[in-house]
Amino acid sequence: MGFYRDTLLWLGEKPWFKGRPAALTTAIDKRVYRLSKGRMSLMHAGGSDALPTLLLTTTGAKSGLARSTPVLYLQEEGDAVLVVASNFGRETHPAWSANLLADPRAHVEIHGHRRAVQARRLDDAELEQRWERLLVIYPGWAKYRERTARSFRAFVLEPA
Image 1: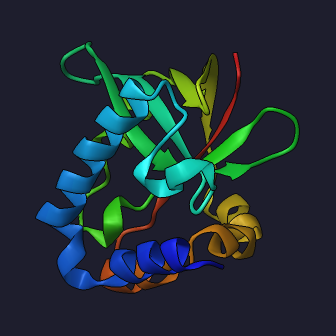
Image 2: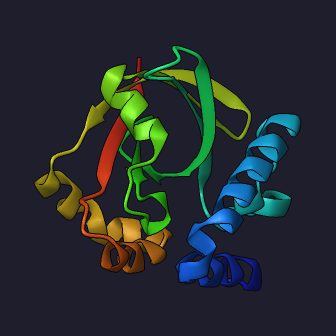
């Protein structure tokens, strides 16, 4: 796997990381991603894809403003990608997932390439079909499921 990826996986599984450290890391990663035009992220530093990360831009459900956040993803068939709204195993869903429920139109930026997408929420059975493939990318999701009673929202983002 590599030392960097192993370190990221170790951090993500720690219960203390889901609070302020996760929020700070997300804020820094968003800025790094933007400034490098998608060439660099804390999740794939130095160009290596330690953890495949995209920058997701949604429309705020309450504010109507563009909101961007780095999100791990699984490449689906073609240009579709799958994202999981785990929120580090917190009891609440991440805001970006509520935004997609309110308005499924969004943009993703992967390695500097930005494109419009349409989100489709997966049902629980569809998520379970993909769960083992998702755990290959980020095994920490299994621990996150143990931390919370809520079901994770998951979305396929298809080119618009």
